[in-house]
Amino acid sequence: MEVLVKRASDLLGAHVGQSEQQIAAAFQEAQDKEQFLIFDEADSLLGDRRHAHQSWEVSQVNEMLTWMESHQLPFACTTNLMDRIDQASLRRFTFKVGFNHLTNAQICFACRYFFNIDAPASIKDLTNLTPGDFMVVQKKAKILRLLDRPKELIKMLEVECSVKENTSTPIGFLAA
Image (cartoon, rainbow, N blue to C red):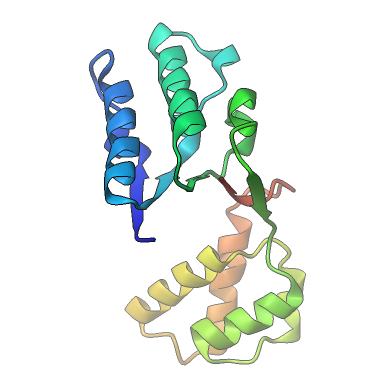
């Protein structure tokens, strides 16, 4: 199936009822085109209703839940904030998939893939690396013309790790 990606910013409207209409339209578009629908940053669309302050926050989640239940094609929702997702939405997902930080073997693979270098032993001390960290460092190193300087690449990865909260919350998504 072709993929149809909808970001929360594509769907959230400034006027009452607009978000609900755009959520419905996204599901309908995926249905009409027989596409695999992905909601990126779904925590903005499926926020826990127990913490809602406005009625539209509840109706927006209700709209998502209704469509999730009736949509006949596969779809997925991504989030890095699993703890903010409304609990009722979890029943609508056939699969709940989480991604942890990279293992040592995956870090070695990422060093080879992104930088074409062997991973130094010191990199194993970085316990919260993700593929996104490697992409950011690769982009930065390309701009700074440091792709051929392995020690600088590792230092940049260390900086990426140091600016993140050190939590055990996995990165990842939910899929149905």
